[in-house]
Image (cartoon, rainbow, N blue to C red; front, side):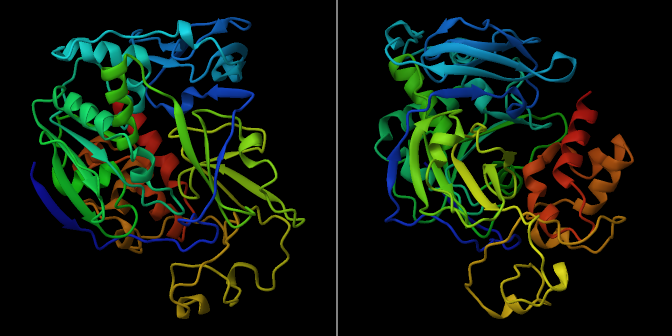
Length: 448
């Protein structure tokens, strides 16, 4: 196993209140309802495999892809299909399962030989729900069967604001992790890269290349790591995933099925006691947050995920993929602040040094969800370059996407990026553009 170190200098770590500490408590929650949301899996066109009222066991398919029917999204729990919730034009928004224990004896298991070939492994991953947990570049979609990646990139840390430790989640699962990484090595003729921080302490198998990544967020994004290790070129395909998914692949190979339990970091300035909640993927948020949101009279924004890339949810919503973080911050719509966004308060968080808060190094902030300024025409200020550790011109790429110029998009690196890579650009953007949404639309347009 080779080991290489890379230092990224561009990026930004947001100093927010409400993070986990080594002393943070751990709580076990068994939700009454779970839900799988197909919009969390770009490139997956859902078709239900069940009907309302059906009894289902853990690991059984809830829906499958219309184009590649072998690719499934599965139930993370035993129970009964409570609802198939649809939106406009009968689009499937989510499938809800009322959790009931005691049916897992009938769960679907896969018998995979130790010397199984690539096709057998891929089929088992597609039917078990693990295939949809990976992403393909270009397009940042669920991988398309039939394409072989030139390399596979596994990220073993999350650098997003208030994110939990992925190493802590996989500690004690060394056997499963090694098996998962060995299995991934069978799926590519290239290399499997595992990116960690310098303090990573778990053993990695000899089949992988260990890359130590240092630097601020978005250093933990698998796509950013790929761009700094072995960038994807036109006509090539790479796969990305996190170390937790690699462990589940190992469980599938060793035991015939993956486990869908997950550790969720409950974080944010409006949380009374930041903690880790052990529950199942897709859990309803109400039991995860029960009794742990401040009763301070303020309106709250509940985010399934981190403040940069997470999905806004109601308190009665559900965990979104990758199912490992919930953040609660003030909404900000009930604030009457002198001078508004231009306030010189030392509690005003900003990436700009023109604010007083820049003088307080190490200070943690409690920002709300306000836009802090109005939307305006795009300003070519080169601000994006300060937080984008990739060899692309982000402002010009955004302009090419907005103008639907496919040739320019290709020249400017559309095949290398994903919406999450532009989250920090969106945060510091003086024009207040929805950059992640724009990038998603651009990727879908080029693919179509």
